[in-house]
Image: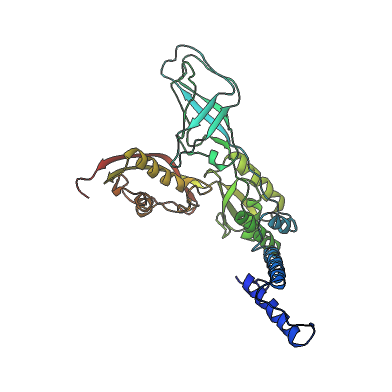
Amino acid sequence: MLIPIEKNLNEIRNDLFSRISAVQNEGYLPQMLNLNKGVVRGLIEIWAWGLYQLYQFMAKVFKQLFPSLATGVWLDLHCLQVGVTRQEATKATGRVRFSRADTDENVIINRGKVLKTKPDGLGDVVSFVVTEQVVLPAGQESILVDVESEDYGRRANVTAGMICRMPTVIPGIDAVSNDEDWLTREAVDREKDEELRKRYVLAWQEVNGATKYAYESWARSVSGVIAVKVMDLHPRGQGTVDVLIKGSSGIPTQELIDKVKEVVEENRPINDDVKVLPPDPVPVVITGELVLVSGSPEIILTDAEQRIRALFTDPPVLDDVRPLTIGEDITIDLLTHLCMAIPGIKKINWSLSGDIHVPETGLAVLSSIKFTYIFADEI
């Protein structure tokens, strides 16, 4: 968008030349000035550069006057006017399963034990720390242990099976893994401008009363809520409203649901029968055989898994992969499109019998993913 106060350096220089020429022609100067070189030309260039910097500054400030264009702390100032503040990053907490085959003895799992995920397609690894000492008693094959991510941000909301490495061995423990519902509190990133701007708009729409926009605004005010679907056409009868929320890890934890319930209860009209609900989980098992024509199979398998996992991960970890939202189906065409973006793949033989239908109130949840490969007989 062209802002009226924008000018480039040539335009400013030409304006100065025109004004100086006009002044000379009107006889206000004792003699004609040489504008092509010399001290006067140098002073003109310095003045033009200073004016150019001023115009650049004014253009930046001008954009910050409007919430739809404002960024950073300027957007924060607009949001404060409607009682909206930027949400800060948090850590993930959850329960990870330690398991073993030999159950003869007690095994101590110490507080501070570090666990890691396997590298994703970008080579990134997320670390977690055991937050309390636990004893796996004799005769028991596995136990769930509380952990917390070392770093802040949604990267810690890993999908099932990603936490599987122990940098140091625990005698008596054979494996570690995270189940589908391992999270107890989702991690969130510091809220981006786009997300904050959406809540700013919803705050104004909320003024119109208890509309679906108001319910969405109330739900999104809770840190960790990524998507909201308001069922306001009497889903359970006259006067009922269902608010479905998606957390930063997909299906929201009970803690997140309770927080949203509390906010909604504080604001809803007394005659509205409102329920805050998680989407119905639709377990998804993805297996496929990659037919390769070139490249490293290990790298291609890792990249393919990363691109599929990105469908189930918020925020988007890849620029060209948009995470699934509430009620969105998974089609074989979509999966193929994501994998075929990787060089070296000729085709994919999916084990799926067809597209995966997700109901309006559902959300696809990745249960497991496994790729194998073969090389094509011919290109």
